Amino acid sequence: MSFPTARFHRPRLLIVGCGDVGMRVVKLLRPHWRLFALATSAERAAAIRAAGAQPLIGNLDVPATLARLAGLAERVLHLAPPPNHGTRDARTANLLNALARKGGVQRLVYASTSGVYGDCGGARFDETRAVNPATDRARRRVDAEAQLRWFGRASGARVTILRIPGIYAGDREGGHPRERLARGAPVLQPSEDVYTNHIHADDLARACVAALVRGRPQRVVHASDDSELRMGDYFDLAADLCGLPRPPRITRDEARAQLSAMQLSFMGESRRLCNRRLKTELKLRLRHPTVHSGLLA
Image (cartoon, rainbow, N blue to C red):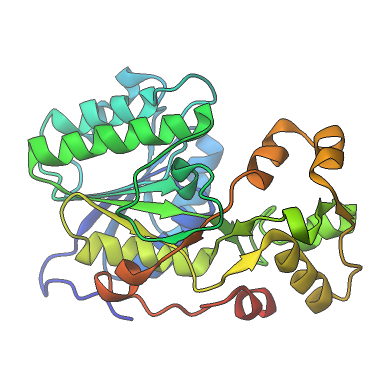
């Protein structure tokens, strides 16, 4: 997949939240784009500079540190998570206030989560389904999406919201199921199991770039692969590929007694995401269309 650029102009991109996926985007674009990335520390700034982007020290929780972002780039990739409390995303509000001071943003891509849908009972659906967040973590994402859509309508920027499921990759910290398998963490018995969705980190980075180039105005896109697996089947597959024991199966009542509230929340939501817009509108051809392919990689 190629991303055309003007002959005498390198697009300017600001990455906010330049972690693992942001660094993968930098690797894809650094030969042809001018890249800037917000960094919260000198140590992180050094890593960003070494990767090929220009770091800018700032903190989304401190609005006064964001002044340099105004008018800096015509494209923005917002990968930063919301705060860890409440139902509002003040970080996104601070970012948009900074960007609005001088305008000039033409495209903005936001990494949201499929968790905004809540439990869907295993239904398969597209982006027209209404959100129904069941946790404050998901409610903060819904708030961020609403702010971004308002910003797009008010400024004329094309805003793409990527709703992202579980991200995995062998070279991503905490991003491969082998770590959970090695701990012997349990999964639900088949009769109570839930459907989960996945995307390889490399494909997610490519989806971010495709949205920065081809995203339609104020559009939601499922950044998900083609897999349709229940959670236990996913970990069984990973165990078989890694030569590890399959995880133990437990009932939901046993899970309530053994697992944390966050782990239980993931086991309480079942859905299957349709990714047609990802393929037809963003024209992304997945390199890892199934978790079988991605886990082998």
